[in-house]
Length: 383
Image (cartoon, rainbow, N blue to C red; front, side, top):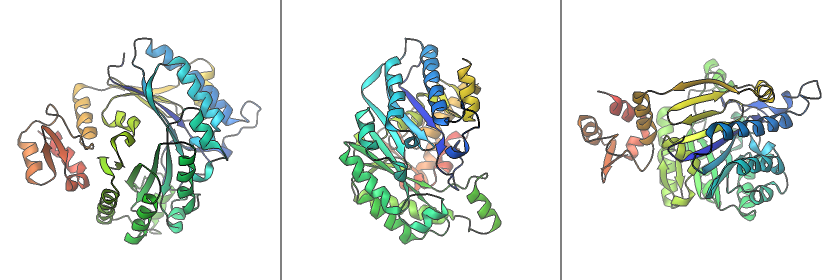
């Protein structure tokens, strides 16, 4: 049985269109409808699969388990499902699982995929936190990323979420897009921080090999993103967020106060347990990992036969778990405890290079260390 806090991740794999930079397990909804009546409604087929997999999770975990600490609807675009449909999933979870009294329930949302009243209905049905994919305030950057929303729509969505009763609202930004200027990102930060958010995530654009964006970079149509420019953007984000009263708690995440930190993602970074539901979803339970079939139709058909949708699994060795604890934990502002980062020649090197410091007895990245986190991990993992 799980020995640490337990979360549940629900993967909604559908999007209205595919973003050029995205390598996640996502599918364009309009391409999923089949010719037969059974396949004509991919969302209904998906919902039936989710409900069946929740029942399987309940059966597999047994009764000796902790209350759920968090639920996270990610994607894809979860808000392509109606509030009623997302509510059906939440109800099925709560009917089968004990949940903590102050459980965090996050829904990722595309600003222009929200139906009128959807945010109010989501809040009424139990969602406590919403995360909008803003990415940039500049239209040409959004166009390059194949994002569909008007830049101002993200700002409006935050206001609507506040009016709907959400206390915790996050915006996701991407920096380092080819052609993005310092001013572009500065204006994006300014716009994001002019809203009533209490959380912001900022990620350097990763050029994934299988994406349309990668093909454009390979062909020379777009310049290769500069790591130096990405570092400058990160420093600009840190400075702007500090001025606005936000503190980093993970390398790419800042919160206005401790209660605004994403509890579900903290489960990942602390290497705790979560159960993934949906096509391609990954799970982790006390050192065992497994992942589901990627294809939504095959995943749903497998569940409809009463079979397991698991595609593969692995049991991590003690050495692998230790390395993961290092790789994930060093990303957090709380740092690494003494048993993971004892004072020795490795940590001494990091201190001398100005990449880390000790706060009490925990090893914590400096600002320069955050920029060179991969290098820090290599040092910690060395002999």
